[in-house]
Amino acid sequence: MNIQKITTALANLNGTIYMCADGFIDEVWELVDSRASLAKYTPVSKMTHFGQRIIGVGTGGMGIELVKKRRDYGGFTANIGYATARLGINTTMVGLFGKGEIDPVFAPVRAVSNMITMGDAAVTHALEFDDGKILMTHMGVVLEVDWNRLVREIGISKLTELITEADIIGIGYWSCLPDFDNMVEQACELIPLDGKERRFFFDFADVRKRDTDSLVNTLAVLRQLNTKCPMILSMNEHEAAIIFELQGETLDNVGRPVAEKTGAVRTKLGLDELVIHTPQYAVAASSKEPPALMLQKYCEKPVRTAGAGDTFNGGYIAATMAGLDIAERLFVANETVSFFLNTGNAPNRKDLNSWLDLE
Image (tube, rainbow, N blue to C red; front, side, top):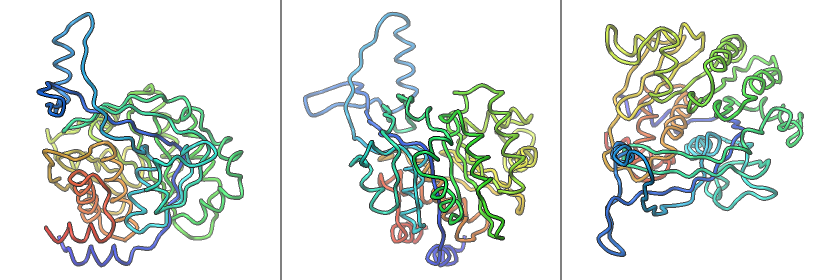
């Protein structure tokens, strides 16, 4: 990989992204496996260990101690927006960041981006482990977000301005927004025919939250709109496995390499670009380039896991705006999330350059 080419491209990165429309505050906890003293305890480090503990109880009740790790911002809009803004992209976010005033928990995001709030954020209780997290959310305020509310709160003229100025438009998460299809269609209607290519970026989140008919319908809507507004869909391995199955494929190397399968699924979906990120590898397929796969540097003891997928997405968006090829986009996204897992924060350009120098 040509590190000099990548760092030069990122240094010259120039673009604008508009993100909407969710907003979460994460109350992040870890579980106590055993406690030796007031100050010393051993956490439950693996999700499987927690699952086995629940199964072992069988029926009845089970008690387990929680230790609060942090209170943090979360969600598609703030997490991806923060990651892109840290990498130098002009980022504007519309979402649920606080009623009247933006909640102080979003201060790091607000410091590097433009934020417009529509009301109180949803609250997520996140159980964090070394190999993943369990997110339990009071979802009501996000479920109520729709296109009419965006128009009412922001105004159609401001929405038109934001979409017109943007190079990439992100709307998410699909699983949390019942009005998602209409929001994408209405946003596409506001795109002027001025010769500028604007791209949409989506992460569906937990596709199991909604029924298969809704998922199939959304994929059909995105396929139809893709000719006017090129679509990038990014997924983790669990989301991808479900969508692959809908297209008659499996997310593995059985029969054919996973990169080749990703290319086939992208073609069937009719989307411009398909991206899959896992703890072990990332793979992408584009209408303009052959599929590529890039191995991930697995982090055994991450400082933070909540927001990792969104940080990967932020790196991928930055690399896309920098004009890098598909393998380079995956490489930058992997290195961006690797920095995040090892330090607990999304990198800025200087951080990422130093991280890449270690390669």
